[in-house]
Length: 592
Image (tube, rainbow, N blue to C red):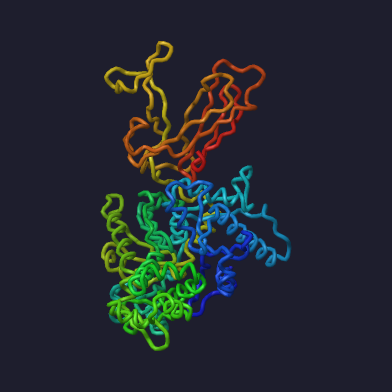
């Protein structure tokens, strides 16, 4: 759906900003550009009553102890429950999508006709994925009883599925030679070559690209066992995933667990903010954000469109319009003009232009990108050191931030000699299209790597000399060793889709109706006890035994639990061995 209302002058944007507006009564008002523009046009005193939130997706990644009660802070400083905001946003998407489907089909579409796929960054932890699922249930996309209606997909996986479907002429290959004279070595000479040159002449922005006009999927070039890296760089995070191809069906195997970090294009916005601190003072900027929130949003929009104009070989300055209320409020706040502040600040690459603009030299703009791009390159360098990742054939650069020429050039310069670097043409939509393919066939990714070691604490028979004395527990004459870590799965272990970890648990008393077992996790794989350093409690497994026992309760009940770690989410099922009835089981990483 491209017809989103709103949008910015000078930014042809396929993506909607993550912004949401609630009325003073905390009811949903609008989302995306509509939210931003409405909030904008409010009288400043009235605006203080409204709750405006932006860029809130990152909160799920950065909050270490995410729960159903985690708060988000709106522009006016008021707090709202994150779950509520995510649910509002998802509900809005649901209504928009169903309306669009109904309009196109000419008949009402019900929610029950739809399977929903929500994409999340691969580096998000289990609680964040479960949080998204809860929010989706609250928004009415699916329900706990009908959980299959919603699939959680991992973003770089979706991108990977899409990339391997591409035909080569839909790719843009960064070629270091093409940059010199619009002409590359012998590899692309052929019928398509003159068209490619023509394309470059027509399309001046992409002069460093050479488009290969070769028909046939990139598939035809990939052989069994070939490896490729997908670098998904978005607004908030960068995700790296390495996949290997398994023929004949071309299933994918994850070779190296997803890594990444908060190195998205928002990092560039933070650097701009720090630059403003330097020129105008942090006290002023923070005050301005609270007192004139709409004007602050205006300034960031102006920056956004200039940010997109940054390029490695740019020579003319970039102008950023300062909102009138910024100039006005600064004079009241400091008693001198913005112009004076710029002269005094010693930031020599930002000047004041008489039309009320900040003039940034291209070097100044590139400097704002540097910390984020450096982090991404650094992260990739670490990845390329790993033995599993040597001999990578392709690197796909996808995600919204992949559109930045500065990032493209940095990746090309650092890794162009090790593998072919390829950028799909509609790079910002790669994940969306891949998620659709994933929804049609969720079994396409057959093997994943577990990001953590998972297990539970159990009692084992005490063995003299093997177990430490402080773990000894004597019960009814039997010697037990406590706190033993019973490992379900190790960090970085390959797990196939559908592969099950089986364990049997027995209630302490036959009459017991609920068994709650704590789940522990660690980044290390050699864990012996749940008290070892680095082992954290991360969730609970809850077996509900009500309604499973017949009239005669057997003396010793055994509940067999099956856990699945090879999917995008961790799932569990259980059965009562004596009656072979299924037992209600919940695995919870959010409220434990």
